[in-house]
Picture 1 (cartoon, rainbow, N blue to C red):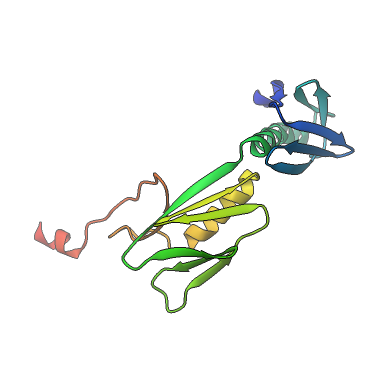
Picture 2: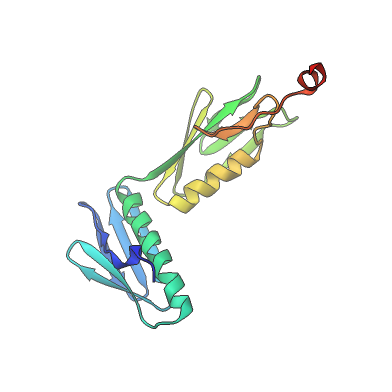
Length: 180
């Protein structure tokens, strides 16, 4: 059994959790998220806490309890404060801008790449930074990974799109290898 799942998920102020059959509806200042309760799992609501319990002692129930606890905790924190990821663009001539809700990336290809923003995701562009934010942690991470996939950072000059603070392992070029 997950050790984290033994602890209750604390409901922050301004957030409400409602159990509706096999759904948990989490409402907060940033929006509303519906979370399906996984099989063999039950959620008990008490004042400002939610306890996650198993209905049986099967292997699948033991696996689902930690997952359900994490999903619920992420949903509560998402509707109260939200999640965000920052991508940085490096390279001469590489740039990004917004046209409505569509992100337009000029990454050295013949045509610019157009990426439509999914529902629930807000994309902001400032100089060489792309900020992706929303209430769904999984969706924010997936969108950031898809945008990064358009032009991953290359190891020789470091050109491309990378996460803020990501360390890119650099390689020595041909000139540096032949001089030694």
